Image (cartoon, rainbow, N blue to C red; front, side, top):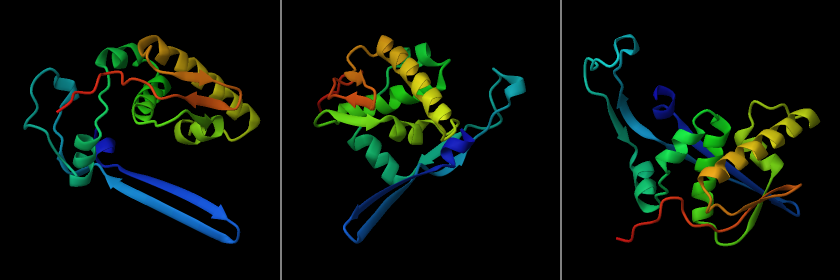
Length: 168
């Protein structure tokens, strides 16, 4: 939790056309402040003081404007596979707002989810194999997910959210 609430999410994108290059980016701070209290050796006894997290305004607004809830039953079923958990959360969000089928290459997936895999032919092959196995696990718990595993990547298709959206 300490690392999560101390994190900033940074994204970068690049576009090169002719002799011009474009680089953009965005930084998102998750929490403005946090106070975390726990005593693992004394569980389930209550900690000394209550924990508190103050989300950043921008992160809070993004959560409210574009929520994508995850099914806790799926989280429990996938808990022994960090890669499957990551891919479930990513795919759930990505397909719920996807306007048309989109191919995500294996290299793009490895850059996002395969930091522990070497950028070698063997490392890329190992990541691809583990990602395919993880997506098969995800499909067991999220049957509405429309993906096609292809030689060059993963074809995502617009899909129903795992938890249906509630109209306000």
